[in-house]
Image (cartoon, rainbow, N blue to C red; front, side, top):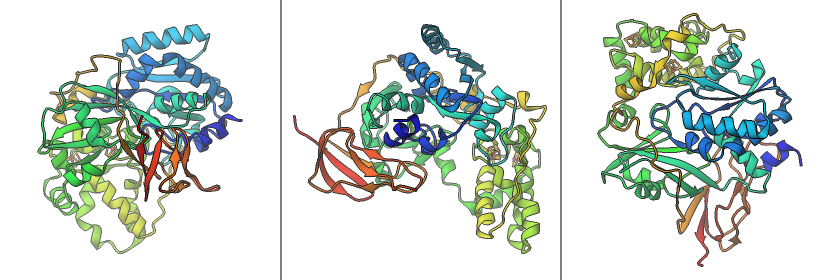
Length: 451
Ligand code: SF4
Ligand code: SF4
């Protein structure tokens, strides 16, 4: 079976982001294959753990994928400060006789933005709202590559490694079956507070949840790699509740047009047309602009925002919310049916190097210094074996998969329970332990087989 078919059958999606089905991404030819191992948001531990503990598999996977893509330039992009991980990878590369290069980066945000990584390595900027393949590169993260290696050993995606950090006794690494409740993950990490909020992912782009009934419903999916436990009154939790109207009123009254949001914007720095200070300046008259051409001229560039949060959580001295403004304007552009043209040949700006945001200063600005620099004490993960799991039929970009099991069915770990519809963008879903199906909704609920 071809690599693309194997990846498709194993239900592999991007393990660290929005969950784009990997078989679609790999059905291409490219000059570069790059592993994104930068893990640029503060506090996350998972990719470092995987590089330390599965270096040989990672090297094997990179060589295999690059061969499929016809990519003769192979890179693993990571932080120069990851000494242990670099040593493990260098040994694995030497052992395999591979020509993979390690691209060592500084501690800056967003080193893990794939468009930034592509610019760092190839010197080329990806077109606005484009993909790395448009400049000859394919980028996958560490977990995705390892899932591909596992797929060749007959193992579909059934489990996740994820770190739990923040208000916990100490950061831990968990190994859990897909569909495990987030509550169980937090409890396994010994939270130091009882009334907590969680961020699923990193502090900049992760989803914030502070309502008890909301947290109760959260389960681990293929794209989760980190949970941050925080007090409910933490700055990041309160920030998540800032409403559109307040955001607009604050912009009207307090934006001093200093341009810091624009000058520090990573997408602006790789040459994209995006100037959030101009959006902020014009926000007050958004509802007054009736002509779509005028709306496009004034607000069109908001479409190029990748929502990394650097502008509002780091750059703005007035604590304003340019990212939220861009998200709001993007929805208005879509509502009006305005098609925003793309610059297909953006050029990196000369200031990019000095505009990189140091991660330690970012952590301080986010109110996370208390947790920053605390790493795992051991490379032995805590293995959770919950009695039940609730496995969502949609854990990826595209259409949900269709349940192929019914209540009462017995399944074994690795059995297909959700089938992607042929011809649609999607991914298969598999049972994450041996057990019985006890409910089928938009999730398949499994109860573990008693031993
Ligand atoms: S950084 Fe803040 S104050 Fe400065 S231009 Fe941007 S939104 Fe306005
Ligand atoms: S969130 Fe802010 S910094 Fe990030 S791409 Fe959008 S405008 Fe630029």
